[in-house]
Amino acid sequence: MKKIICVFIALIFFVINTFSQQFSIDYGNNPQAGHYAAINGINIYYEIYGDGEPLLLLHGNGGSINAFKYQIPFFEELFKVITIDSRLQGKSGGSPDTISYDLMASDFCALLDYLNIDSAYLLGWSDGGINALIMAMKCPEKVKKLAVSGANVVPDSTAFPYKDIVWLKDFVENTKTATKKEVALNKMLLDQPNIPYKDLKQIHCPVLVMAGDHDIIKPEHTIKIFQSIPNASLCIFPDSNHGVCQQHPELFNETVLRFFTKQEGKNE
Image (cartoon, rainbow, N blue to C red):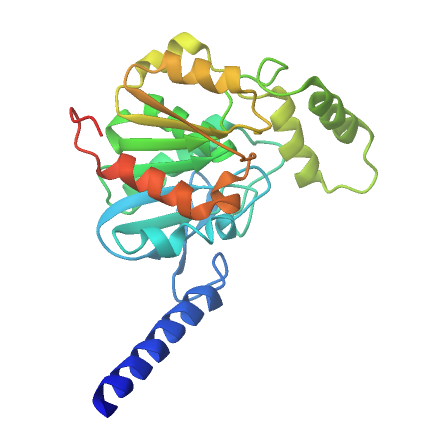
């Protein structure tokens, strides 16, 4: 009986220690996992966790690696997670005068070459989802499967509410306190992307298109993206907003994992 109790106590300490280690990691500021790569004339910062097939995590506008603090510890158990600070964000370099989704997608394709990775799974949230869609068109050989959440392909009121466009325009034109970088990133939201729906037909890898049912991206826009991609699946999360990966991480992670590990041609 004493032996059983000792084993039980040891197990508790192991679980507590594992849990505390997981959440003591400062993702995006971890020198043990962090690296810089000279890509397209700037230094791109990235962190690597786990082993297995490569999985790129691409964050949203104004974010950083830390946006995926609930995804990294989950996916590193099965994948080699490569999580990146997009140019002009986090620890990565870049100029406010040259910022675009096409350029960021080019950075990520080049980073895979730098790391000698032939192809990878992609998970992109918001702007990261836009970048992932562009990668699937511009360097399709690099993308095995991609999952996008809260992505848009046009910057107008068919994609998100007009009041948000008005707010962004006022911020870009009238702010007195924002940095040049903040203005540039918000102006990009106003002007980009401009991806014709017909161009999405170029994407032939499996794609999971996701959004929350209360996402800032209109559901009809998300559905149109899904309908425009030949080999796409759709998931609208209930009671969820634009940040579903942070709001409901367990449901989000399991949904993405099931998509990544599903054998093509089999219905589940």
